[in-house]
Length: 234
Image (cartoon, rainbow, N blue to C red; front, top):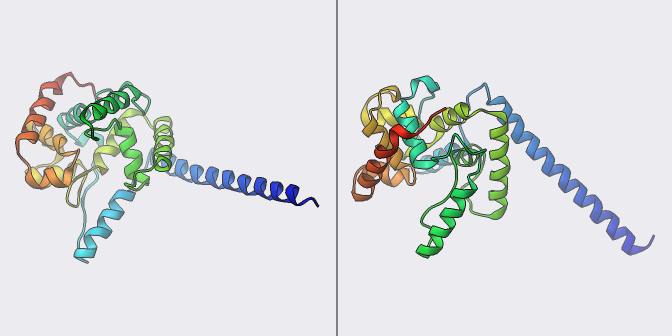
């Protein structure tokens, strides 16, 4: 056999195997997403990493997390999080390309990465399955997962899962745990200012959850409150 034809044949086989392996991985992801349409995720990839990190310091460390239904989360918090993180949440199909473009232009103007354009759906995809590594491959996988989630779930389910798994402080995950940790009340009872303050933590929950107040947090909380009642929720 001609050596060059032999090499081409094996390269073709390897490419085919790589494509099949990638397809299997995507099917595995989609199977979980389809399952979680009705069943609640017990934990996320981000939770597992965070628990491992905390247990390196304290082997007995546990996460604060308690799942609650959509109806048991204050509408104030739903509106506040959408206002803070993804104002067009109910309108886009998973990726808000306009927001990404504006964030890119803003970062260029500032000369640094000051803001991102990730939607709630994108953040959820990353939290459920991925690492915090920044790479084009990870970003491409995030986009695929985002569109899978948007295809399989409605906006109400996306927001319900997001509010139950998002990080809100050192070892604090989800609306119920954060409401009880910071205010000593269930998530259903969060008042507008409390909800806006929690939403203001989200860009950097470990830091802001620790300091809880300050010029930036106060301004951001006030800005969220100004927009709170104009925000549609699913």
